[in-house]
Image 1 (cartoon, rainbow, N blue to C red):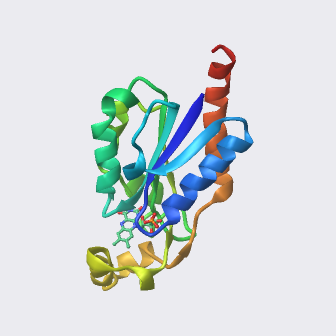
Image 2 (cartoon, rainbow, N blue to C red):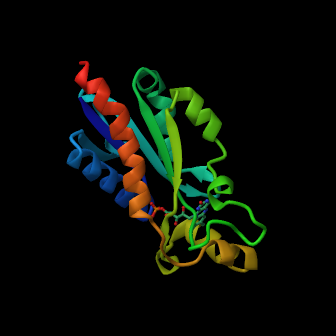
Length: 183
Ligand SMILES: Cc1cc2nc3c(=O)[nH]c(=O)nc-3n(C[C@H](O)[C@H](O)[C@H](O)COP(=O)(O)O)c2cc1C
């Protein structure tokens, strides 16, 4: 059985998480492909799905939301795990004591989860290089940076926690490998 790790990423850090998950799955005996959601044409080879998106303005990227809704009927008949990458910084909570992972989105999480009966959803910290942002996102970022709260929430840097990502991927392997034995 082969797994597909499908991602939507604007600046590459979510792609990096997806590639790491794919590599970890393969190292632990689960064959896996890693693809941009827009490059997935054939579902035939896959028996399990890990789908992730970068978070922008508390939402998954449009491409990832469309991928899930377009393929809902196929996905719902397979094990599906979801992840989001977004929060930035070294602190788990903001100055008001709110857990970044709980307040960062996606706002459509319940809808996403229930539409494909997802087994789990995990939020990972992401990465940001403000100097590379372009277009509407660059504009949104510049405007947001005027506020102290946004500056606190969006520091530059790479905050991806590879150990956490590895552990989460391990939980996927644990769920998949017994199924494989009985096939
Ligand atoms: C304009 C802007 C809005 C963002 N909005 C959110 C958000 O709502 N929630 C969150 O957790 N992260 C947010 N982030 C942080 C990104 O999700 C983070 O940088 C992520 O790692 C980007 O992934 P990518 O490199 O794959 O595009 C935002 C970043 C920018 C620049």
